[in-house]
Amino acid sequence: MDIDILFSEIREELERARAKFPGDGVTMLALMEEVGELAKASFEEPRANVRKEAVQVAVMAMRVVLDGDSSLSEWRQQKGLDPLVQ
Image (cartoon, rainbow, N blue to C red):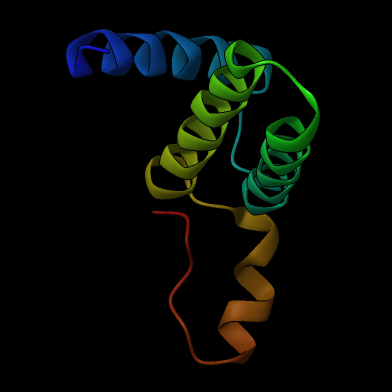
């Protein structure tokens, strides 16, 4: 697979996900959910579905980097850490 095609697909899915689920709340939790779905698909589903789940994991990891996760701000502050939200 051409990496440019993959990046294009990830970008499209990122835009779709941001439109459907705007904001920065619980992105880390959503990432963990997607990782679980990828693991499950790896054992039980066709390769095309595994690929789809892997793209969704990539998108949610990008959202953690780009959007942060405001649901963790208080906990991180108590630990003396900077917020994930810019």
